[in-house]
Amino acid sequence: MYEENEGIGAINTYRRRPFLRLHWQTLVFFMSFLSHFAHSQIRYSIPEEMKKGTFIGNIAQDLGLDLIRLRSGNARVITGDHIQYTDLDTDKGVLVVRERIDREELCGEVSPCSFSFDVILENPMELHHITIEILDVNDNAPMFKNDEIKLEISESAASGARFVLGSADDPDVGFNTLQNYILTPLDNFILNQHANPGGGKYAEMILQKPLDRERHPQLSLRLIALDGGNPPKSGTMNIEVIVLDVNDNAPTFNQSVYKAVVFENASKGAYITTVKASDADSGSNGIVTYSFSHLKKNVADTFSIDENTGKIFVSGQIDYEKTTKYEIGVEAKDKGGLADSAKVVVEVVDVNDNSPVINIMSFSSPVPEDATPGTTIAILNVKDIDSGENGQISCSTDSNLAFKITSSLKNYYTLVTNSELDREKTQEYNITVVASDSATPPLFTKKVLKLKVSDVNDNAPAFSQESYMSYVIENNSPGASICVVQAQDADSGANARVSYVLEETHLADRCLKWAYRMEKSEQYARSVIKML
Image (cartoon, rainbow, N blue to C red; front, side, top):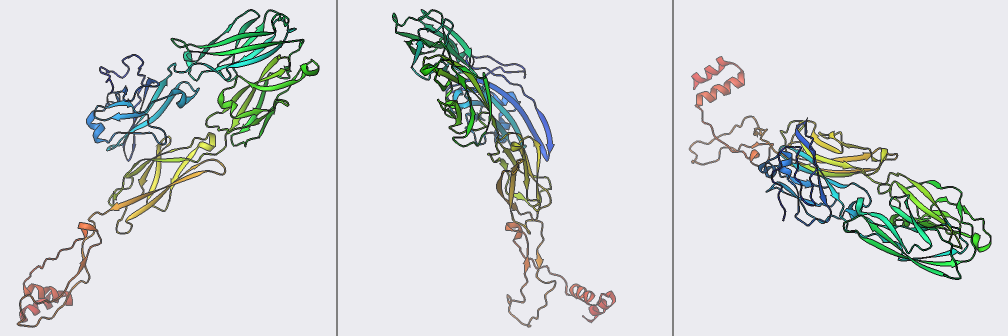
């Protein structure tokens, strides 16, 4: 399914292939907390839409690991809550495509586009951070919001009058996105192109030859949008111009840029700001209506404008984690089709609406009761997608337990033993890990780890009493019961199984020990022996 990259040698070299490039720079450092913990970073680049099984990179070679280490360390890909787009083939030590990757679906307009994950190994623990950059492929053609628009233009419109046509949307990036517009025919108008407030380009027509309604009451034009792909893709919008009489003043906004602020939890219908344009004409030619211009879909679904008053409201969900700022084009148009444009910049304020997320990267249970303080129990990854104090995380556990939380890497925490364990006192712990952000009031997440303590043979059997005395009738039969002894062992399993052995000693020796124990006198003990 994949072609292996042979010949990659030194750390600063890479091999080129068609549509597949490897960019990587590895920084390895070792930290000592309980055990040696290796950490490195690698970056690869691949085009979007690659087939499943396509070779991405030789992880084993790039990290300096052999295949035996990958298998013995149970090497695996950790993505947290995200989709796993890649697979690690531990038999060959290579990274391959697991799921189809659509750059536009993954990143939208964000460029460069990438996603990250971790490769983790155990015994000893190693963590390697992998970043995959997704390169754009020209798989989308520019598309206009409408296939056709109609403009009503007065025949008295002066040369130089401008008419906004809007823009095409192309979700590709770089040279593969929208690059140019073509207007045809050019009998009365020329085309001008401008940068969109939110990125990309929009087109407008400029009147260069006066219109004559009596000769041409209606004109048909075509606006073609081209991207920079090879070969290029295009989209077309038809323009129908209806020529009207005498409207010689265009609306004019009272400012070119409007600024506003909105909280990300703003409800639908929340007021944003008001835009205002005036028209010197009278009657129907002086009536101004407002609308959004050359909008992308995410903006059109989020805001609305009152066409009569110019008031802008929230109409959809605002999420600071997806968009921190909106730049909205607005248009004021009179009944004659003359128009002016302005820009509205809306800054989004973050609200603490996301709780921290705890991911368990590694968990060792059971742990032997003779584990030394500082033994690693679990490795946790904790993240909060909010910003500022809303995204600053602290991680803790119950201070009364024999465990504590330490951290040496950003967003990574280690749960270790803080004191000696005793299975005979506590056989199982419910360890509650709490991740909290720094907002007021804070949001927090709890996760309970059930840790079992395994037994170690650290307890000797103990008889229920120090000595036993029994009377025996003479001439009794062999096998007759004399007395019953019992011993207990606090350990469990095989460590608690008790067997008994009868140790024979000479009668005189036993009497000597008995007499000495009773009188604490060796002389008395000897006198007892003589009597025997």
